[in-house]
Picture (cartoon, rainbow over the protein chains, first blue to last red):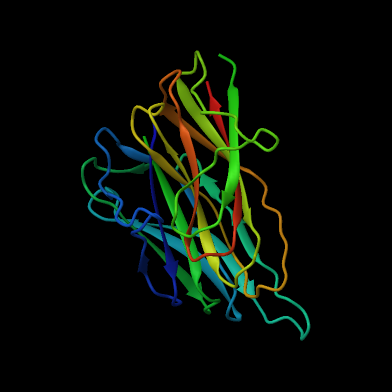
Length: 137
Length: 134
């Protein structure tokens, strides 16, 4: 049986750990691992910027907190880049369909809290919008 | 049992606002999405979304599932992210993503499907979500 937990947020500075704590219209979702859950079975993630600055970045997420029994887990999500187009042209959009990491198999302790943060590494490309869903089992 | 597929779609036009997906293209009032007879679980979601690039900003797209058809409570799933640096041009296609799940359901009860764009308002975003029951 699975149960989902989703957080999202905006990463506005390069090489800066940014906590993801909101869920759109839900401003403070509970980060407590549900009773009965023993592992993160899947991770569903998407991250891209709007490309308002020229640069190139990779994006990673960090899973931490006292619920993660093996210590902090760091996972790469995506990589993106942007250079200004020639005069008279428009920049292309940046789009990412969510990626599903099946069988993530990260051990967790129920009723403890988990923290999810994201980070853009490299050169700032604007604001990175990140969403993470953890699927507990 | 064989898998059963049920779909809803709709347009989300405000940031951080849960918006029910209640239509089905040519079917403007398909009625409530009820868990089909014989189904024991929601075994997956097939979802796609994209935006009209009407504002130079970015967003993350969420799907919310709520209602009495989900005895374990609501679920929320990320299905994508996007952004554009100018509002005067752009186009793109996102293929649907398959997300395997294992969520118990209650037969003959409704599941409400919502789309939401988080962060900043990018104009409008079209969502389509298929629930796969078994």
